[in-house]
Length: 170
Image (cartoon, rainbow, N blue to C red; front, side):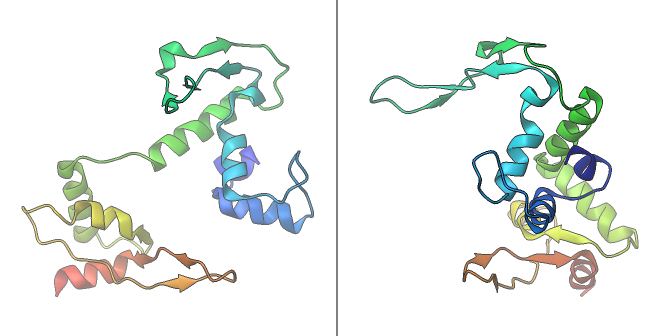
């Protein structure tokens, strides 16, 4: 799983589909989902560490997210089943993928995308929507298409970068 993610470039949803196609189930006997794969990829217990107290709550109060200095750690509590190097590579990829850009950084990245004739790739619509309120440039709004999966659930759309460049040039 870690190798497919870190070395093979597969995302959690693709890994889950692969495991389900092989007939593998989770420890609870359930099919794999994007979320369960993500939990495995981000849980330090697979490199032998026991970390808890990420969240806490008091009776009749909301759960709160504790800062890392409040977490309770026991490094090396278990035998590692994943090489720490590949685990931390996966962590870095997850962190970078979820990185939030400042308005200036977003404008600079969009400008580089527009100026360089990069091969078309998918750009999340949410990235453009996040930058849409900026006033220093007139940013395009990516075409929104609603796709419905087999269960009838609407999924968010993405737009090819080439389409975005074409709309910027117009």
